[in-house]
Image (cartoon, rainbow, N blue to C red; front, side, top):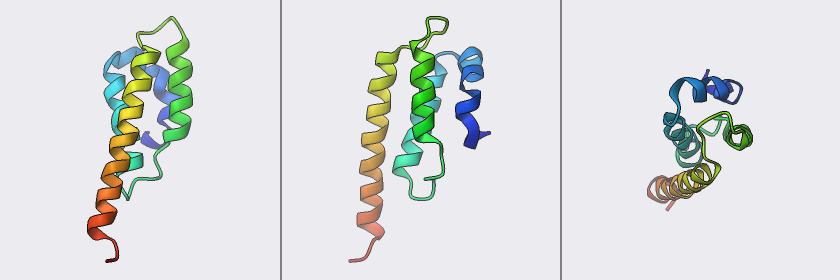
Length: 90
């Protein structure tokens, strides 16, 4: 399910509403921030989420989504850098 969440995103928006922001934030954060989760569908998920947010039939706000996804990517990158700095070759 999690590997193909971009296919099921419309169902998640209909079922969970604004909680989808948290789900998207966590997926994007884990993809960029955790060393062992680069297999998550972050890029395709962003395209699908943007397309869904542009529709007027759901509760997603494209501006809120851009801000949250930007924060998730920056914080995830900082966490990944810190992990590499702590556990990498010295």
